[in-house]
Image (cartoon, rainbow, N blue to C red):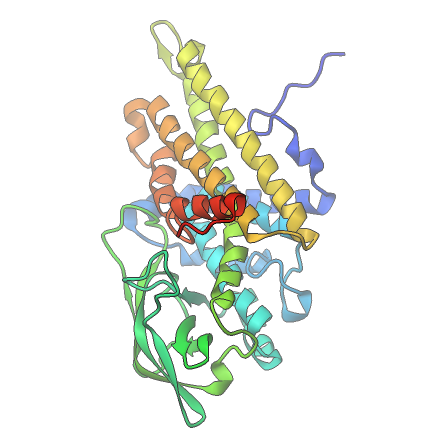
Length: 390
């Protein structure tokens, strides 16, 4: 009996390594992406518009704070399932996955991990339901890859804190009802929940973007913003707070670009099989087959890397260096594939009627945010050598 043909986008049958529940999560989010995201996302990218109309269904599917406990209105998924959510959302667009990543890993996670029980009960159910949107205020205009060089500060004044400073490149900033803001205090860096409408707190949307156009990016400004001590995250001090959030988000980012790469690879493969040049399909050329084979190879390696990372996460053994390795490898993989796929599509590849140019542009942001490629290379280098080269 001949062997069944392999799935070009899953040559090692990674799907067979998933549990029934994990496969169900993947199928559910894939269906949402196919039916709700893909029909509109090219136009959203062209218009520079985040499709807020998708938020209620994302919430209904349990995609916001998906790996947090059910007692707070969340889905209680495992780490691999959260990774699959990110993969299928980014198969649609990096901006959609970024929205879910920020809401889940950078806003809901710190409230759960570092907040009080009162804060958890107040905010997490509303955030899981998509009724309260959050943003994560860490990066500063001058800071970039050096978050310790933080200028935003919070000073105690009676029972309140007064925050001054600015944050930059903040996903969801102008959508957000609350911001998780990290600021220097006399006791080190601490996190604060700053609510929209608080006097002195303003958000300004960043325009003229050529990347993540279907996503809201903002600058945040704090001019003597007064918040009560009850809005301070009480259970963490120092950089380990925001860096712990980033590890959670970067984990999801190791999965997301696999979806972008699969989208580009699939479209390029189908196009190459159908496009006739010199009286034969483009896919009949050795040069094209070599490119497609290399894409399949790199996608396979990334799938296995993220799956093992997810198993380590679910076993409580995942370490930040392992996340850095996967983020570095998988985003580089995806951006290279998006560019090659654009090339295979020729002139047609420069329009948003096809996905590769959109994914290629988006991935220019993904390879930069939450640790640039160079930063993650140096994290791995430090682990290998024992020497800090930052």
